[in-house]
Amino acid sequence: MYHVQGSRGVAVESRHPGALLLGVLGVTLLLDQVTKIAVRASMHPSQSIPLIEDVFHLTYVRNTGAAFGLMPGKQSLFIVTTSLVLLAIALYWWRARPRGILLSVSLGLVAGGAIGNLIDRVVAGRVTDFFDVRFWPVFNIADIGVVVGAAGLFLWALFAPIEERGEGSVAQDPAGPRCGDPTGPSAPEGPDHG
Image (cartoon, rainbow, N blue to C red):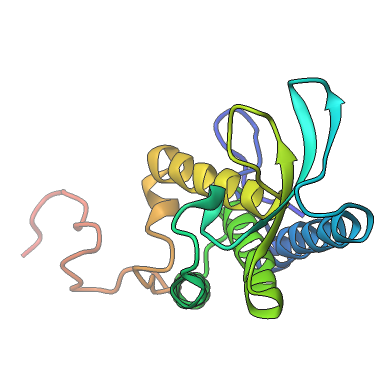
């Protein structure tokens, strides 16, 4: 599945980056939707089940705001914003044709999480949240996907080789540099036969 190795022997590119992105997107979306369906079917709103007392609870919250309950009641704004983010990911993928594993996984996580919460907003007008760590607003798997994916994109932007960050931006002639090409290698130095 992987073919390019980094300096420490770690695979950095995928032979099938589109399949990797779609696979991560699909798993994130599936886990998100299945867990939300289970919470809605087995709990009532505001119900809290302690799994680790005062540390980790399952708490059913119907969130009309953004991630972590910010800006409640702005559904139209969130739907438009999420749609624009998904469009930007699709356009970037189409134009840049990235092959990096970290980039593919990160974009898949962000897109899967964004679609998961978008489905909730469009279908129910609110997002189902349920992970409650007591010191943080209640969240769901889609939120985890977006946050972890964004962190991956940040790491990719900081540490990816420059060639990988610029992938797809410069077309290379498969035949190599041509005679007289000012960007090609200069002629070897030697005696002047001219």
